[in-house]
Length: 393
Image 1 (cartoon, rainbow, N blue to C red):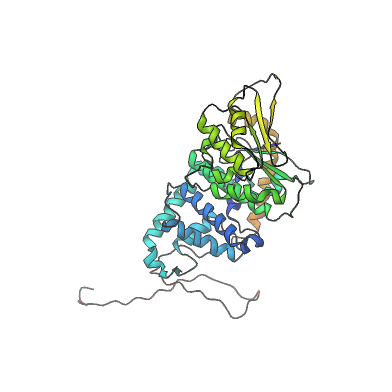
Image 2 (spheres, helix red, strand yellow; image 1 turned 45 degrees about the vertical axis):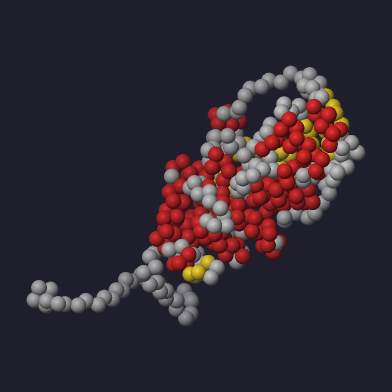
């Protein structure tokens, strides 16, 4: 078992640098899925700088989405550093039918880039750039191929940071899922404790689209999704209708009962009698649960036995650090080896330096490349000077 703490080094830290890697080719060929991933990635990034405008009208969202699409369709990964550079100097000249200068002037693009840069440059964000990569295959399976349990603890994060990470995680899971072969057997299980706020009925946070996509498609790839909540009234109805198995405890309010009824009856394609299920929910007692499933002909009411459980309470970051102490040493050693390899791999960049559009950049490349060529930096400048008083100048 591994406990990951994104944005903190108390447990096993996670690097989000791979969160914007190009998706698999089959996702690139699926227009709807690709747009969903791009939109949620752009929205989650903008939420870090408190920009939560409508994706259809927000020029910030449209610009970042266009940049991600441009990179991903070329099969290129994009880092946060590259994204900031692409915001200032986008790899295209038009957005729709308008030129960049009209749609989003460079001065405004620079302000947007500065806002994102300020977030990732802050000391508190440094932990997001360190640790193991967000690679679902390596998270689910060890080097020996054996499956393992991974826990992501996000209670220490702010609301915007939680939304940012959950969206990146769901997108990464979708990318991993689409690389799997279809199967009727269970390969992996995604469990999320307290889904409140991430899958609301009316609002459209960045986590909503990828979660809905998982509820619709995950089972075909052998990925199970288990969601837990104490607030069923705050869940999206479309998502509830895609859930095949329900474990419902005692509900205190009629509003919660009606929302659960909508989901259960809706997912049964009209095979369940609404009034019958409603009476079952209304008469439930403590430690009783209602089970409905697509594999059962009718709902089943069962009761759990009395158990004794030591409820310690929420696990603190200090507790997680104690649990993961041995793993942290190993992760630190692997990080050092990776840094050594990166240092010797060169520092070539795929983006030019950030300069004003007023500066004309030209590049010299010799017709032939060989070991006999030696590149030396030179600075050349030209100017036109007009003298109106030669004796004073």
